[in-house]
Structures are given as structure tokens and as C-alpha cells.
Length: 229
Image (cartoon, rainbow, N blue to C red):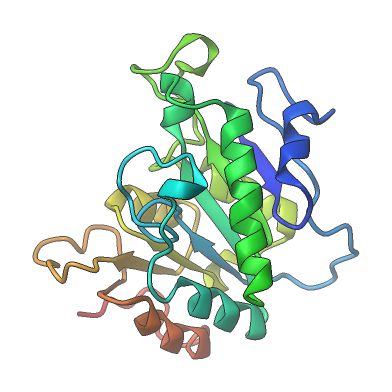
């Protein structure tokens, strides 16, 4: 099992040489070194297809196009008291399309854009593995690659999260299944094309625009596990 976490409030580039790196080449940094007495809620976000337009293995800021409404969504989540945590498969690292330093540098820039918009991210968790198409140490069947729930479980432990009061937004059923296995009650499948036929899968909601997620923040204690649309 290899699980990776980076601090979205500090320089992500520091992860390249972090003392917290483990045998898989992954690392972790505590995001909020605070004494937490109560469990927190989280908005979990997939990256490619939710935060940015997914054009395939995006790894430079020149190719990084933010999805319409993402800053408003994160800003709303933060004002409602949610931690905002990115959960992303990054097999492009394992495949050799880009390396961890390039990924960390890009996410450092992404985090800065969110902070400047008044929508700070709490943390980023990523899996660089692939069970068949990765190189060397990255070729492994891990429990952190979605649809496995490893990254979500690690985030829940690191940030003392109430998963039953949390929300996952992703554009693939693998995001929804990982969230389901981790106990996330509200699992939102984002389908901007509007083609939602037969795509419910493990989702509890399907939306065509990120603004449609907003009502869920006010419904944390209502209708858990109910399906809509």
C-alpha cells in the first residue's frame, strides 16, 4: 500500500525532499497542526474533470483550465466549515509522462490560485501507481488507486473527518465507488455534458454544473444515502 498526501497550505514542492517520504516514494505532511476536538466534514474533489478540464495527463499550468464554477464551489464549502481535500489518481507519474516533482509544482500553483480566490484547499492526496502500465516501483496493485478507498480513509484519519457528513464530487464511477467504500454519504457524479443515462453507479446524485452541489451543504443531516435524479 502506498498513499501520498501533500499540504495545500504550504509549498507542495517541499514534498520532493520531505523527510516524511516512504518506501513508495510518496510522502505526507500534516496540514493543520491543531488540536481537533470535534469531527470535521469534508468536500472531497477529484482533480481531472472536476477541478480542471480533463484533456489527458495534464501536468503543466499552460494546459490547466479550471472548470467553470470550481472556485465558487470551494469558496462555498469553506464558508460552510468544510475541509476541501483533493483525491486524485495520477498514473501519469507511474507511466513516466511526468514525475512527482512536476506534479507537486503544478499543484503548488493550483493551490495558490484557490487561495487567491478566497477558496483555500486543505490537502491533496494522490496515487501515482498503476497495476499494469506503470514503471518500476510504481507498478503495483495498491489500495490508494480509486476505486479503492485508501486515500479517502487516510484523509479521514489525518483530518478526523465525519465521512457520513462529507461530500465527494467526481466525474467517474471509480470516484463514487471509492467514496462509497470509505463511507462518504453524498457522492456526486459531475457530468457537464448532460449525458447521465445509466451512469448513476455508486453515486447518490448526478449534476451537470458544480453550482448544483451547493444545496447539499445545507442538507448534511437529511436524506443520507438517498438517490436523486
